[in-house]
Image (cartoon, rainbow, N blue to C red; front, side, top):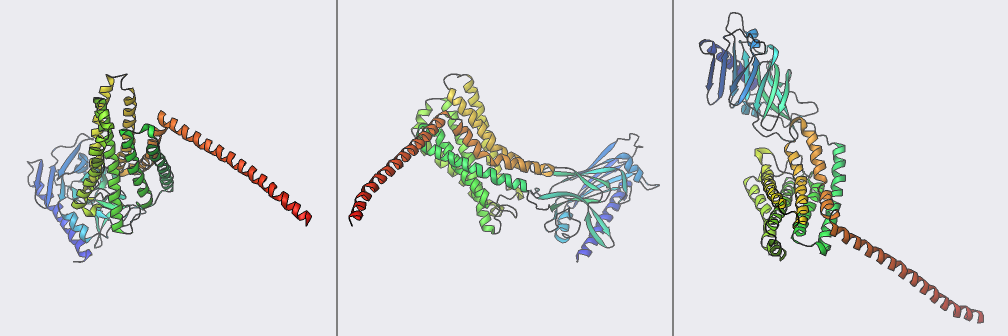
Length: 500
């Protein structure tokens, strides 16, 4: 069958079902509501027995999980003369997938978008009052439609209805608006009745110049701060301990992740390379959170029993547990994810995890678990510190720094989860700003606000100045020596020239 024939068959099916269900509902006037569910559809009908005296009275019909809310007087107003007022709501189980396969090119796209990758993302539903289709309602009806797939970042959810004119069927948005969108469902408002669905269409991909500038400037600053922090933890011997070792590993992982994100996250030309980049990013970001977990664990063990600090400072804690777990756990998660869904790495826009089938939770799931565990650690630590005001004053400062670090590193991914619907642009900016300044925050908290590190910086600056002063003195003395030697050589030469 051609697309035109498929569209005609779909329209006949939709009209026939509405007519048949309306007629069936009227045959049982003693039953106010009726519900039927089969493999191919679910139906619910409502027979108006009163006079809808309350102007604000609203009824709801449900089929599968989808619902239709309408005002009672719109049903009575739409009833054909001589017939009982009745409303029907039908939800088709598989019709949407048939239309997806055969009628992808039908319909009008959103402003600035394209139809190339558009698709239906819900069941097809039908609503009818009193036997007439496409009637204008005095008060709009609301439809709640559940998503068949997760909404992608660059997709727009459209409320559309089936429009069949002159032998051509299209999905049109006329008279329908989106009231609410979240990760599971969309609520639509339509001023007429027909057959409805959700259509996902890619929005126009326009990179925000402001967002691009913020990303590059802030990430460059973050990389410089992380580099200074890494050098500090490596060269500053006075602060070397288990905590700074953990901070060093976290900074290394975050530095590599930021560098890879800045230079390669948009390199989607090669699918294999893009998948590899996405895998490395997942590993490095997971490693950052794993080292944060180890920091929380180390603080908890140390504060719970101060003698543990002597045990950990000997290096056994680091060598036996920290490094294998800090780098082994993220690798295990990535390997399992890649085996279960190798196609989930990379997308047409970015080299990151695909949101299809919830694959992005292979990263967000462990992150959420680590954040919750660390939050529990910190609550226990605060309870312990409350009873030890004097003996663990330094640990109290470390704890508050670790809590702030957990908050700063966890916030961007919370914003990433909320990048859906109308607030997507705002969350995009919040994600970019909070993520790009992580390195600057770590350098500020663990280096600039650390008294020992500041003292070490002052000693380094003094040594550099002393070296510069000595170098200048040496240059001046060498210049004096060269001048004296020149005079000593020129004297005999002039005397010899005079004699000649």
